[in-house]
Image (cartoon, rainbow, N blue to C red; front, side, top):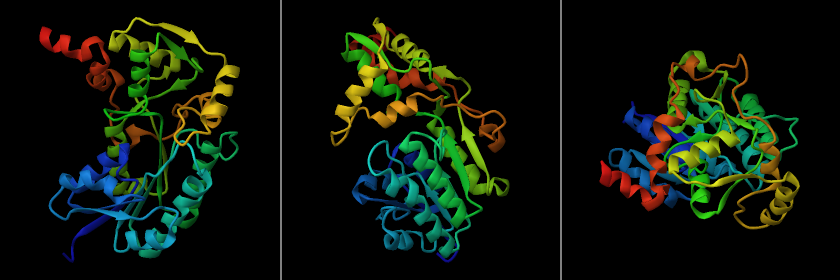
Length: 312
């Protein structure tokens, strides 16, 4: 036990986190999954040996709990992020709390997963808080690696799945900010990038932007979804004024489908910057949307995809 490797993953029960936890466990780490609700991480305990994966209650806003969660850990990964809520506490200040605890604990590696578009001068609170979180991490743990993915796709995503669900239910496909560009990146590649940042000395202190092999406009994304799910729906461009009004109403709900801050994000391209290090610099060949997404969108086809299985 004296030689055991310990990693603490904040936000490990989330979409990206579950893949990171699986990879760390496969590399024989004792993995602590730190978050607000340990019960939400229980499903991951079967991904390792008995006692290898340990859920803990340690919100990034609780400095004392964070310090306990990182004690003795040599690797720290912060994946915590929100799309609405208290951006200042969770995304601006929270990463600094974790990084300070990691430095005090003598951690060897710190990986901060941020987002493309993080910008202290942005008019989006989300983007500003991501940039502030990166700065807080750098101040406390200068050797940290920052990863900025574009929109992340995979079987559990809330991007392709969400719009495919809309295509199944709505009489037409609404298009918001149709010309905005994305560079969707596979969740497995993001998890591999985290592991590369953990294992490679040359990744320390650097920032990487993670994108897939194809840049797609929002209109391209929606057309791909319609074609993949075999839905014949008219695509209708939605006036931004109308969407802003709708968002101003929806954002008052506990779990809003759309907020005015998200509309601001949609007004800016979400692609890897020219000359910025990316997946290739970490030795990772990016996975295409076409190779993965049709497999998990099959269930949105007429008949739930059962006709395709019967034909096969």
